[in-house]
Image (cartoon, rainbow, N blue to C red):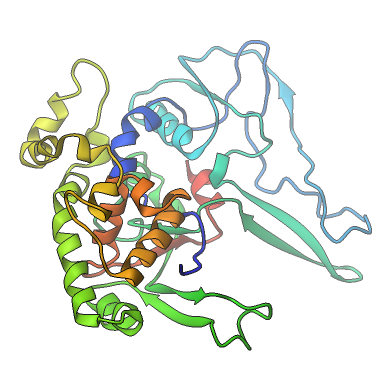
Length: 339
C-alpha cells in the first residue's frame, strides 16, 4: 500500500460538514476566564524564551502572563481545539455572546496547534523552527468552493489574517528501503497531482496491470458516490443548526437536502458498501490499495471502515477542475491565531 503522510484532511468533506452542527456551535473566539479558574486572557505569539542561554539545542516553552481572574461569561467551553475556537468565534462575533474557552494545554488549537523550538546555529546565533502537530494538508481554503473552516473565517471577518499557499500535489513513496529507497529495487517514487484526468493518466495507468479497466472502474466509483457529495458542495456549513428549528435554514437548499435524505444510512455509514458491495465493488488491486492509503490519511483506518461521506467528497474534490491543496503560511497555528 502506498506510504502516505497521515492527517490529510479535506476540511470540506461531507463528514466534517455534517459534524459541524455539534462541533462548531459549542465554543468561543478568544481565551477568557471564569470564576476561580486560572487562565490566560491572551497568549503571547512567542511563548518561548529566545534569550535562554541553556546548552540544549531545543529550548523548552515557558508560559508567560498567567493571571488569576474572576469573570462571568455567557457560554463556557471546555477545550480550545479548532472546533471549539470556530464555534466560539461564531458565538462571540455573530451573536454577541461573551464566551470563555478553557484548555489544559499551554497552547490553543488542540490537534491543530503549532509550536516553536529554538536551535543554536553557532555562538550568538539561533534559528526558530515552527512545527505543526496535526493536519498538514488541507483542501478548500484558498478558493471556492470553500470548506466549513474558511466559511467561518469569512463569516467572522478574520479570513484576511491567513495567507494560503496553493499547490497541486505531493510525492509518494511505496516500499521505502533502509536508505530511503535510494538503492531498493522494490521502491517506487511517483507524484500525485490533483485535477481532472491526471490521476487516471498517471499512477492509475502506470501501476495497474489492466489500465483501462482500472480507469473505467474509478470513474464508475466516482459516479456511484456522487449523491453523497451534492449536500457538502451545495449546503454551506453555517446553514446547519441544532434544535427544533434546525430545518428552517436548510429549506433554501431543499433539492440538495432531499438528495442527502434519500441516501439514508449510507450518508453516515462507512465506505464498505462501495468497496465490497452491494452499492459498488472495487476489484482492481492497485486501486483498492490506493483507496486504503487515502482512507488511512483521513481516518487511520482502511477504506471500508472510513466514513463514506468523507471518502466520497475527497474523491470528488481531489479530481475536480481547479482542485488544489492548501497550506496556511506560518502553519496551522496562523489559523488558530486568526480564530
